[in-house]
Amino acid sequence: MTAPGVPAGHREQTAGRGLATRVVDRAITVAAARAAAPGGIRFTERQLYYATCRVLWPAPALLGRLPYSPAPSLRLSHFTRALRARVTAVPGLLSQAEVGTAAGPGAGPAREPDLYDYGLPRLLVCQDRSLARMLVANHVHLEAGCPVVAAEECWPLDARLVAALERAEGATVYVLHDASPAGVALPARLRAGLGPVPGVRVSSLGLVPRHAAALHLASGRTRGPVALPEPLPRGLRPREVAWLARGRFAQLAAVPPDRLLRAVLRRTRGPRPPRPSVWDELRDLRAAGFLTWPTP
Image (tube, rainbow, N blue to C red; front, side, top):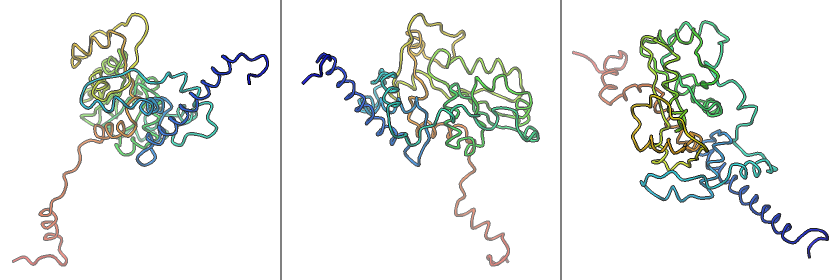
């Protein structure tokens, strides 16, 4: 029976919205568990949004090697409404307070001034401030021995930090950015802002449109005319330029958190020491002295 004064259509519409919110809420729970695996990875709200899209529509993951970047399967406003309506907190989700804190070593003036007296071989600059916080929360700066900073907060670099990069003789500033006009232009903008620093190079880690297509990342589309940066990066293919010119973009947050962490660590950890062989160990034992093989 319809309540007095409440149209039946309005009641059905309200019930439909409630069912949709419950479906999204369940998808958020599943997505959070997947985003945190393995080992309790911390993640941002935007990363959780894209993980929820993958739960609701997993078809892109079934397309194999066919390059394709679909539209998100869930409106961001619907996701936000369902997330705010949750009674329990989402395990692993970075809070707004955590996202607003400093992004780790190198983000600002060091408390220990003597830190600038050493060489700094690597620096990671993120276009997205929240992803810089996410990488620090997952201890990437410790595992890679590489400070993680946000471009909007650290650029232009402190003169002491530039001197530390130059002192390392062959330092690299890695740039992590979206597949968007602003993102693909960020490495060149940082390179120009850095100036002629001997021995320091700026290297892009991506994302670029072909990565988004290969990984089947959800992509959006901007409204209105799109202004492409000049000059465009030389590594972009004509198809990628056309993709950007149509207003398409893909965010780094769409990359699954575990995959993003592995990729960043693989590129920023630096050269690994050679793995010792059995013969190396035997030679070491021979030269060790006590209880080793007798020599003639």
